[in-house]
Image (cartoon, rainbow, N blue to C red):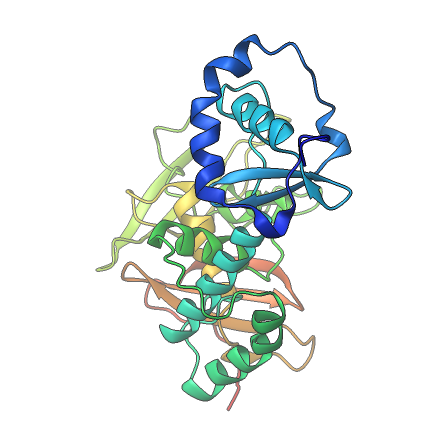
Length: 292
């Protein structure tokens, strides 16, 4: 439109617009006209942002906005449609590999079919049908990791699992399974009782509490020396999301077991809350009735 300087959306050629953007780059630097970009509707098309007002594309505002983004004068807008499509693609790929995209656990083909069926409506309604979207493995791994944990692990319980927790006001201690429990740590005194084939150790240790008191001697199985505290917590979370293998009828606690990097781990949960986690060390947890 020669009077308004705008173009009808239906007649817009995005390739031509891109060329115009490059050609006008220098002129834009000297253009004193300013735009309030908040007044425009922004749509991501053809690797660039298109600005519209009242249903009409404003070419000048479009070029000014993209130039500002490229020059770092504005934050990069997120491509919401593309991000949703990538998430959908990641979910489908996860199911194809036989992994539940939420829990990270193995699933059957029938279970996978049920998950995919539930996504069909959103896929077609969202306009992604027919598009070939390639998603890098690191994005898939990131999505799996961010969605795989349903269990709850509080910071207090994490500390109990790693360094041990005082039993009320007594000098007894619960937990304590970190490889940092050793004689190089000034808060502990340890004695190795047995080294297991998987690298875990059975030790006896005492811990100095913040009030200066020394704990009673505790026998515990600790993780291998090369396991960091992060490795331990990540592995316990992973095992906690597996299907329960046992249950204690008296209080409803569930037992979860899994092997990570050759180390067998038991996790006990109360509902979704983790209340204990440790390496088995060849001695599985007693007191739970097998779930069939």
